[in-house]
Image (tube, rainbow, N blue to C red):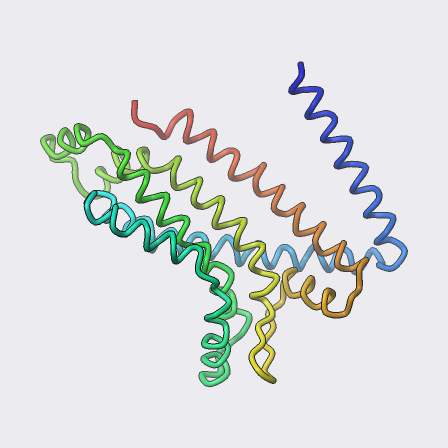
Length: 246
């Protein structure tokens, strides 16, 4: 009962906040621009999804390989934590220079900056999930000759999936936040910009346009909330109910 009352209270507060934001934004922004910002959010969403998938394809196998070697894993984890805390924007000048020199498309090559600092959460959590796998299960799988894709499907993926989802959620949220500084990258007199809601928020912030800043942040927050409810929450439920080792 208390949870229902608390959730109802939070819902009312959220609806009131959205109503106040709508009134504040409506005085300066047309419906057409609102729809345009929603479209910009969709473009950033595509970037986030693609980046999470690519990072997962790279770091899940590496994380499992490291996690199956406990001595190596315990040495690697502090390094990974340092990389996760390292300010990724220090690499922005290198990336901007490379894009300009090689004449690359900023719409594509600015995107990795969004996940440069957050990808390590996937690796760190996959290593932790692999370390938690009981050695007895590994011995049984080896004795029965479980290898290749069957080994991944029946042993490793169920074991690491809850930890992977935790890392992916963190990486996804960090990527949304990083889009504000990654979709517009500056170095000296050179400014590169990709189309997305992060660039929109950064541009409106530079102008001091508070109604449009509020619009951009609200749309970004709604996208994050929607993805958390429709995707990550369901994956957590899947991890609890089906993809686990009993």
